[in-house]
Image (tube, rainbow, N blue to C red; front, side):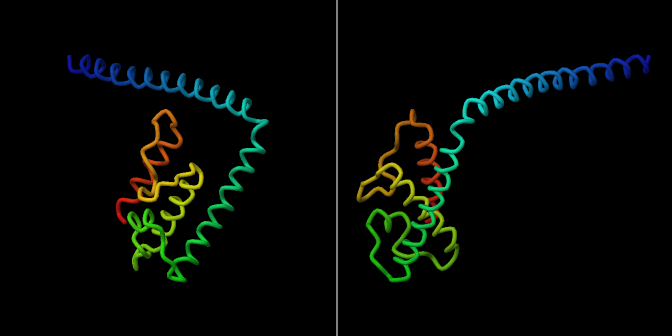
Length: 145
């Protein structure tokens, strides 16, 4: 009788993983098809996307350089900046502070935030998914400062 129970347990344990694998394989095929369709739909846009990424990198480097110059020259930073990041970089985690400050500047330029008190401006509409996600990411990144 012990053999019958073991066989029953064994057959159940192998049957369920097979179902899971079949379901995952089906989902993987669906995802692969969706990715291929996306690549085909955006193929003609790739040069513009690449140019946009390069422009963002250049702008980020320029902002970082301007900010580093302002800090090294002990220039007075705007109130919205000092409120969330302080008047100067901290002695520890200076690189992380500079990265966060640069991303805040890039966000403000990208979305034309002009608020003189709130670094990121008001919370954006959740319908604008990319902006809202970036706003949330920066809000979280600003907490330690």
